Figure 1 (cartoon, rainbow, N blue to C red):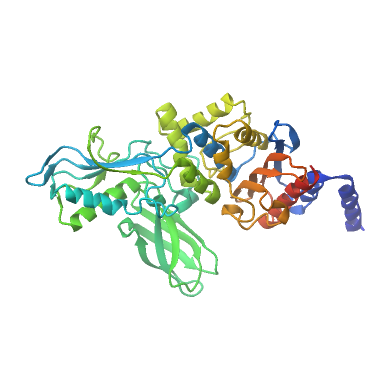
Figure 2: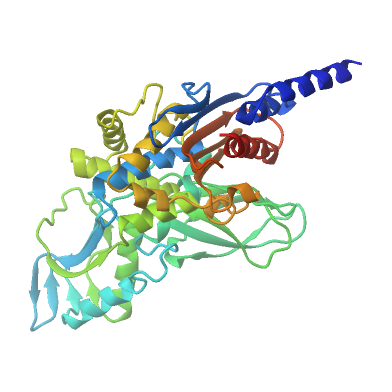
Length: 479
């Protein structure tokens, strides 16, 4: 009788409500939402008028939709054609007769997040061999010095202080350095046997990244639940959790603890392989505190892809590393401090100057990985309206968002025909967090900007996403 009474109430409620209000009430009535918090804001992009809101000013953990704040400000302030530059040269004096360089080979980092990146395999993929060829063509046969990387563009705190220890050693928690390379990611290859066995480490890629590891992994099931625990600049780490059984070659991706030093070691090794004698071991500006090479003789320069392409990958694939790089670059360019906190100051200043409400926003990074980030749906929706209607580079920003059901992190979601070629958005997900923000058009041709954040639900995430899809679908059909 009790269940029948509840059913009649819900049926009556569904008949009274319309549009997204009906879909929202049905979602909130689910038992998995009993302890949840929800913040929704849907605005008309033309005039910024509110179409619908629910707890729109409630501060919640955003996960990766925070990347929309970082990427929009970077696009607008730096411009879509902005490029990062990495330079290799030498300091000191080169005796061309003897081929002896009395100085250092210096690689000066320019904050490029895409140097050697797997996301841009066709862009400057031969930069290492090109550098070696150019050094060889200069006639250098001996270096009375060392290979140095200048990683001083940003501070030496690569991981935001409020990130979880569980994240920092893994590829998605890779830190940001003044000189980053290969997505600051190393592959650890394993061979696994039956359930409960200890996976065997086969090798590392790049091999020069090999470091001391305590292997506490076990093989179990078919899911990847393995984690790497390792601090930035450290030589030791350990593996914990489980990885799939009976695999000939299973890859676990970890963060590189010191990318600038890694690149110095790679160049040192490549020069040694062609017979160049180097007196001292490779190092970095961080390690050699007395290092100074303001003036170097340039050998070559590598330019990154344009910022609009980097941001497209950032928003399609939700690359934390790219977002944190852009945040520090904003700090470096506009406050002369390549730090996370300086970059956050730039974000808040931009929003204030643009008239965007950021009350209730508490930011600890640029990617949304910290569980201490907190924003509200209204503030982000207002940012999206600004970028669509007032921003200089709004079209480029809009194009950076994946299309529903076909691209990036939205590839397997929003498959209903009502979303096809109609919805572009960024997704966000963490434990007990699901969020979406972006744009869509209604059947009456109104373009709307939206942000929807749900925290602390229980039960399967796919059911929560279905509820979110229904809210947006009803809005499209009824507004």
